[in-house]
Image 1: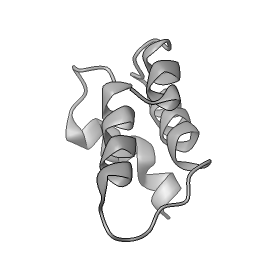
Image 2: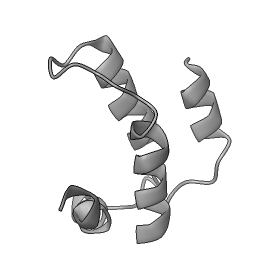
Image 3: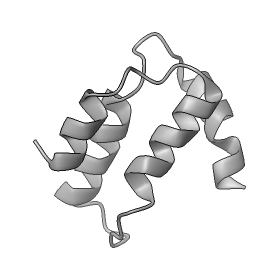
Length: 70
């Protein structure tokens, strides 16, 4: 498990829009990856998903991140 994964697991699960956005930024702001999806990229996505509350829907997460993608 990466250091980032350990840090994410020590946080309470993200539930609200601001928490989801903060988690997304925490994981993605400090990393530069190539466009090709390799093990590093998949690990980052996994770290992000593991930090979310499991009761969220995909729509909840998309809505929370919409501003990040604009």
